Length: 196
Image 1: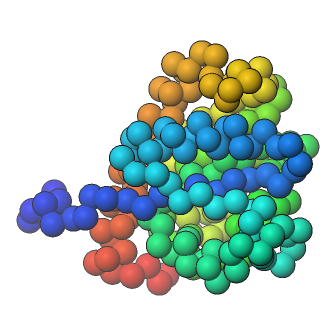
Image 2: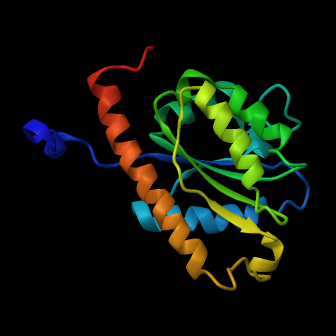
C-alpha cells in the first residue's frame, strides 16, 4: 500500500455470523456449525454467533438472552458478517428481516457474505433478495457465496459434509473476499467515519 499504511493497518477482523432461521428442528444449526468452523479455520478466530432464537427484539418470538442494545453492540464491534440464510418460498425468512431491520448504522461500510441452503436453488434466491436489503443499509455484499442445494442430503447425521471439497472451495473464495473488503473498509472507517 501507499506510504506503508499496510504495515500500520490492523489486519485482524471481528466476524459476526447471523443465523437466519427460528423454525423448530431447523437445519440452520447444521449449516451454521459447518460455516462457523470454516470461518474459524480461515481467520484463526471463532465468529460471534448471533442467533435470533436468543434475541429479545420486538417482532421475534424468541428468548431474552440478549437485548436489542446488546445485539446492536455486537454488530457494531463486528468488521464483517456472514449470514446463514435458508430459502423460504423464494426468499429469506421473516425473522431474518426483523433481525436485519433492528439495526441500521451498525451495518454501514462493512462486508457481508452469505451461506445459503434450501431445495433445488440452494437458497440463491434468498441471497439475491438479501443483497438488495444490505445495499439499502450501506453494507457491501461480496460477490461469491456458498449454497447448498438439497442441503439435508449433503450433510450426514453427524453434520459432516459427505463431499466437502466443492463447499470448502466456495467458502475459501467467499472468505477471501470478505477478508479483503473487511480489512480495507475497517481501515477506511478508521481514517474517515462513513457518514454519507
